[in-house]
Amino acid sequence: MRPPTSLRQRLIASLTGLSMAVLSLSCLLAYAGSSRALYSQLDLALWTISQTEAASALDSPTGKLHVHLSMAPPGALGRAGYPRLARIETPEGVRVAGSRALRLDPLLRQEALEGTPGFANLLLDDQPFRAIYVPIQRKYVLMVAMPTAPLRGTLATLALILVVCELLGCLASFLAARTLARRLLAPLEEMERAAEEVASGNPRAVIPDHFYERELLSLGGSLNTMVGRLRHLLEEQKRFMRDVSHELRSPVTNVQGTLEVTLRRPRSSEEYVEAMGLCLRESARLGKLIEDMLALSRGEQQILEPEPIELAELARQAVEAHRARAEALGLRLELLTGPTPARAAIRYGCARSWTTCWTTPCATPIPARACGCVCSPTGWTWRTRGPV
Image 1 (cartoon, one colour):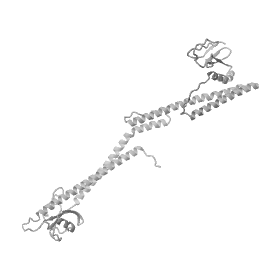
Image 2 (image 1 turned 120 degrees about the vertical axis):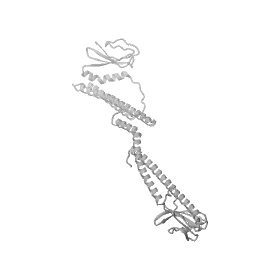
Image 3 (image 1 turned 90 degrees about the vertical axis):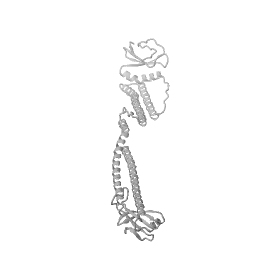
Image 4 (image 1 turned 135 degrees about the horizontal axis):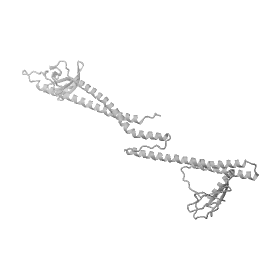
């Protein structure tokens, strides 16, 4: 598996590589175009010189063929003293005038005699030359040759300049790519830091979404939504753990209190059976709580449907569960039911006073009892104390 790489490095490498490819292609095209232009200029100069030589080869008063070796070639390559050679031959290859060092190619000579001028590259004393073959009155062939060393030197200088320009361009493209990558990836790096802060245990961290780019703005909003849901889930989990701790502590405390009170003094078999029955019920309640928690943990995505319960039965179970511990503290618990089973209250106290707490609201007021607790339409939301 390939090891992970930095996105910034990949972006810099991609941009730099693309720039280098474009620069290399541009330099190659520039070199090729320049080379073609220079060789075209050289061929034009050879053509001009050859036409001049062919036209003036018979201008001698004696009528003898000759060449004008003192003529300088025109154009950029035709400065005074620029070396060039010329030679005139018969169709049989016999030199009539011009340089003795030149040798005409038989095939090109024949094509020139047929009226088709041609160009050729040749070596003379290990020096490269460019030559042209032109006919003179279809009886003779004129060859004019010029060295290509100056042109090749010009092309070498041009190639060196292009290589230097390409290297400088690559350096400039690398710096530009690094700057561009840093600016483009700055929002993502800021999001990365915020995400790492969230991952480190800080759910209050906020993913930045203050960017102008639509994609980054949408990404930041989606991440903030995800973080908000995660924060809500963590809060729900904490609240659930608190509720679970409280619900689990109540049965355990009841069982412990019942056993402590039961073991303080010898009791009859009926009292032991009653205490064991209470412990058994609390154990069953504890098991049901554990089963409910397991069901919640397995079906967090399921929708829970509320079910009605009997508050009076719930109050009776609470009284029975805490009666033993209340007696250990010198208190007495008593269950009071309202006009309907849905209304119930728990009254506890000693010989001097009572405290009453109702568990459900009432639809209509009920007269005050001996404990001084009055039900109102807003419900039994307070506790009162009064004489027995």
